[in-house]
Amino acid sequence: MTLLTVALAVLVGLSLGLLGGGGSILTVPLLVYVAGLPTKEAIATSLLVVGATSAVAAVSHARAGRVQWRTGLLFGAAGMVGAYAGGRLAELVPGPILLVAFALMMLATAVAMLRGRRGTGARGVHDTLPVKRVLLDGVVVGLVTGIVGAGGGFLVVPALTLLGGLSMPVAVGTSLLVIAMKSAAGLAGYLSSVQLDWRLAAMVTLAAIAGSLVGGRLAGRVQPEHLRRGFGWFVLVMAAFILVQEIPEPVWSAMPAAARVGLAAGVAAVVLGLGFVGQRLGRQTAAGAAAADTEAREPRTSERQAREPQPR
Image (cartoon, rainbow, N blue to C red; front, side, top):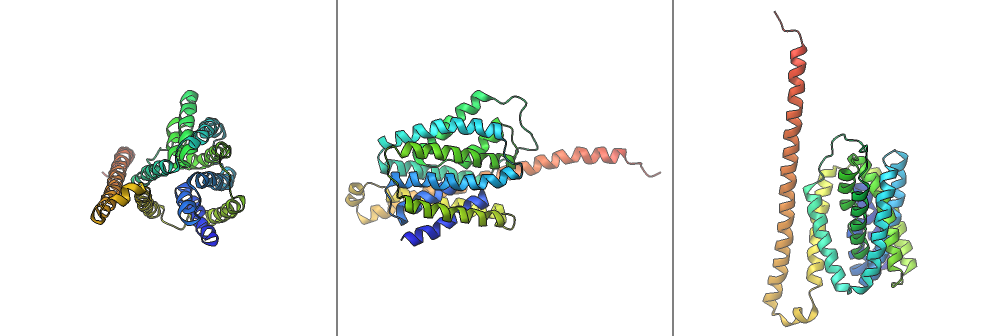
């Protein structure tokens, strides 16, 4: 199972390289259900894997000028405080509850991916950075990351675009810096109560980094819209699987077979319904953006026609 875990870890890195996120969403279920690690050890290992992979990926973005250091370091420092506190608080929460919370985070991530990211236009960095808001949001996002080991890119990128006024490419690059910082602090919080299998962690981390490098090279050759939607539906299926798996054994054993099937089908129906809602919202957002773009172009076309000499 170790070899299978390492092989699948390449897919974790591939998703980070192609999508700029989604690493922990795949790593925790991989380590729990394939490698057989306890929940808290899996979350701690996931923080190590995602943090190291994000740090490597952030280097290439920094070389291309897609990292806003002041905003990233400020947000990341606040996130480290929240992540460390979340890692310490996690030792008080039972493993099954952590997995259910993780599955709920997966649902939010999948819906966000199916909905798509809203464009930020060509805005640059604000003249005055809202430091208090950046610090508050950083602590909250870090707390979520520290407790459940997820909530990295899909929470950080919107916060950076809204608070820091960063364009999407710069927000993605800066978010990798933030994720690396938060993951390191969250891991430090977990290590106070969790022992890692460092050999397995190192193997999975190296495999994920290799996958991220391959994903970075493939990013320009794969249609990102189709990839994002496919990944979103995959995450929804994984979330439904985890929610069904974490139904308490006494409750599951006491139910007749027909009730078990009905419960599993109900969970799947709710999860898939959320997916269709997210996809519909994404289409509405895309249609609205296209309409706004058309309206913005029409005045420029009219002005150009007015300046052109009219035939006599």
